[in-house]
Length: 471
Image (cartoon, rainbow, N blue to C red; front, side, top):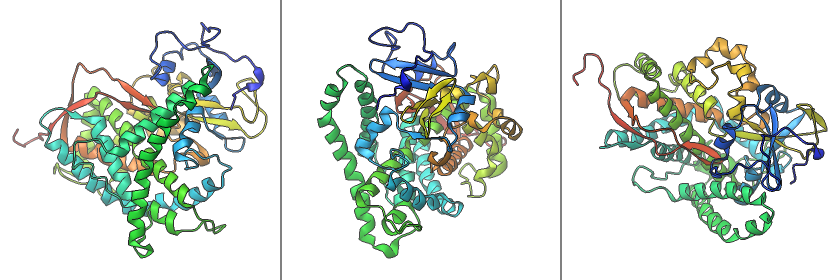
């Protein structure tokens, strides 16, 4: 799908070359988000990056974000890498077009699975998985692999809560085969989207077919096993988790049901979206906490107040929303490092954006690292980590469209409350239980595979020594 914008010339960084367009020399092609973050200074809120044959248009300011986040005039678009993911997830909720039948059916069926009563039902499972996670870190004899261990934890959590399936992630040191296949699929989507921009892109893309079949086969084995486990129990054992609703519930307005292939796509979608972004968010939050001792001390004081002196205390369902400072830490983390760094929008009818005509079929990407650091909203120190940016009075004074880490409107992340609840619960347990020390020589390194995740980030963890407690 060519992003033509009626042939208009849009603002772009200086130094455009005839063949390569705006692709810089001597930059790492595996880090396009970070490359773009370094180029934002001096660019207007609407700009384009030409990469060989393809045009990528970005909204990097809060005001433009507000315009295109209006569901009445704009809809979700699928940027090239997301379209490529349809190879593996077809019309799952994340990769579906809004007009596709299965999107509406699945959305309506699954919204109740994230209601407050449903979340209450998931809470004890989240705590049980966190028990295993805390035990693993308690037994560590050296630095722990923050992102790797959190990925194991969040995968186990979504597996048990959504599908009644355990991956047994803490029983082995090996990376789960699903995680390997998932990472391969995300990296493939990123690579295929990049290859498509090349002059001979379609030829290179076709040569990837063998790899595509391999990844699809490895991914497909996971939902098949999960579905078989549940079907063997029979409908009488069905709860109100995601899998039960997909297998045995009908769409109330129409009586429609999801077919077997779409259920497989939805499982893959939720397994990926339900763990990859959350583990990244908690990893970044821990990095910020260890770099800001004053913030960590306030977070620890909050957990002491709510959980008491017992280092093994488990937050109740009602206590999780009371960790207001930790929630502000999480929100500020997602402002500076949104683990899903953007989403694409397309107009429903001809319109004007940033002074340029935009037609149906044209698309732009809301670039969250730009929107979330817009000095017109966030002030002259927008790059500074400050959880007080999310004090209630500051939130009320700020336009809502200036902060969109979970997307927007009806296509926003359906599981955002699940992710927030899990992330706050885990952060509370970790800062309450452990002294967390990072290697002073470590500089934040971020890996990109459509999502963002710290890499090489280790922590030394030891039990906290409280006042009056012997060391």
